[in-house]
Amino acid sequence: MLFPLRLPMAISLAASFFCTAFNNSAQAEVVVHSSNGYDVHISVVPIAIIPNTYSCPWGYTYRVQLSYTVTFTGPGAPASLWVLQGTVGCGSTSQFFNLPNSPSSGTVNSAAAWRSVSDCATATVASLDCTDVNVEISGPGIPYQIITIPGSTLPITLVDFSAMPDNGQVRLDWATASEQDNAYFTVERSADAATFAPVLQQPGAVNSSSMLYYSALDGSPLPGLSYYRLRQTDINGTTSYSPVVVVDNHGAAAGALAISPNPSSGETIQLPASAVGKTVQIRSMTGQLLYTVQFTGSVLQCPPIGTGIFLLQATDPVSGRSEQCLMVRR
Image (tube, rainbow, N blue to C red):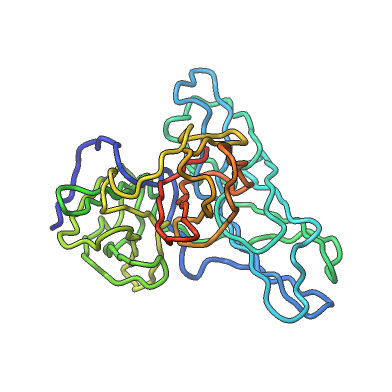
């Protein structure tokens, strides 16, 4: 069932992403060749402006959120590089950001910058002209150098994409701040975060510079954990994808793991006593394993996984039974 909305939504959802953007499937990628025989593939795209406040009569500080992917290919690839960091330019301002030195993907935030304009509630990557990305790199067989990441096409500014159980169905909501040549959206679903299939389709606005709200219901959702994403199709047939969100159709009473605090930004989080002795794993919303540890105490030391929404799972090594929850890092 599909029903486009044009009214503000109440945000009280199981899983959601805020203030991001679709990355074109042909987004720019730079390949750095090493003398040792391996290659480093790097993609970095500014996707959102994160102001420190939405009340800014005299200006505000802000950070730029960037989506990145780093992969190694070829023989002789090391476990990690020596240097992988960069700057993102927003107009005349240049802000530093750091990337993990080993292969990974996700989002990172730049250092804070000051803007002396009272547009904190409406600032976007496009309005602040955050398009200039440079990356410093060095490692085995790669001398220190600075490379420029070409800009990527961002046809949709996605302000929110979320999923939540709703009386035996799954409700999906999303909102766009702008659309360019957007023909339609396709909601896709997966049981394993790897293989996705289309569930339903919703027409886009083609071109828009104002907030638009969309909503849809998956009337026959999968039991247990399932993953959803939006596939956006341009009028010329080019496709791009949103971040993946996860929803648990078992409900909060079955297999739910309570952690505290959540959301969190500190170095540790509290797990219940029932997690002691279990294998704790943290995965991205695309199913990528980011961290695993045998839990022996009451406090989990948080690994450097960045900010966003993650799936934390505790599995009994004897019975194989698992508990999980969504973990928000900010």
